Length: 444
Ligand code: NAD
Image (cartoon, rainbow, N blue to C red; front, side):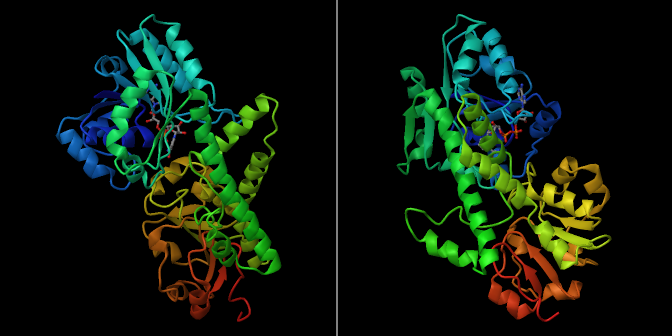
């Protein structure tokens, strides 16, 4: 099949590359000229494990190409995927301007039947808006399909190639057949392609992300209670996670969710509900609790240093919002570091992939007070305490004694509960984590 992907970010580039890999001809369109040039020169502009070899292979085999020219891509394609940004506006409402702008251009361009598939996360009713926008410009027949994307950054290639389900919102038989044909190679293990109306499909994506954000947040509240009553959230997690009605996943306490999806999608569905006169109370709490959770290590740091961290040097491990990505959108580190600097601390920060993206996103005051370093070890040199904000695999060092070589006493604030309490106890470091007893204070 001939496919155009409009918007070549995390979703567009992964989708386009994976569609090419099952034999389709894919043209990726982006308005960012520099990005298109880099991709044409063979560079993958994002960090996503496993993407580069697929990208290289499909370019070599002439199935994957890049352009800024929407018109030529549309002319050559029967299916056009919209993988465009839908960032939150000031009031939390999803900004549809990117999607509707392209819809208008498509209305002016199409000369024969096309299926326009929206992969962006969009409010309920967007398929209708896209349809109306295109139809206001042309009489050529077309279908608009909702096909929300569930891939996770850091595991995007695998998620795309082996989806647990594909959701397709359409009432057109013709479009449905094309979508089934396109997705068949990815559903060989028997996972379903679920067809529904466009509105339900659009809502499915928001429901999924909001439920997951709620589950994480619920567990963070349990962790906060654990700290007050002297319980251990790891034990509670194991105790409830073995109940199949609850499940083991998304039960890990930490310093809150971030990223480009959960925060914005929770806000967007909350806002949509409000517009319809419905007060989505659970999500209101989820947002408030998560905002507080992102900076919940700060009072612990302050308390440890008797309320004064002026001129303390604090190491930071982890800047991306989760491991295996360079994405820092809504990363807890952004908020946490801002607060630490506000209280007068100096920072030394390391992340395996997100050093550049973080500096672009951080405020001037954070950048001015932070030394960014290339290795986890350098971030330990000369510090008074370490804060761990992202659960990168390489931070799970088994040798906890190492901290004592760089800090005296060694003080670690672990926002992701990376270490076993027994190991920490044996190493004799001062250790604060989330929802678990603080260790090592008595000896000092
Ligand atoms: P992104 O910001 O990484 O990429 C968007 C791309 O669109 C950018 O490269 C930008 O230059 C390009 N663009 C903007 N306007 C354009 C135009 N007029 N024509 C062509 N290109 C244009 O965004 P993303 O993370 O890939 O997310 C895209 C959508 O998918 C969002 O709605 C998001 O909520 C949703 N989504 C994201 C994820 C994720 O993990 N990132 C997962 C599922 C769904």
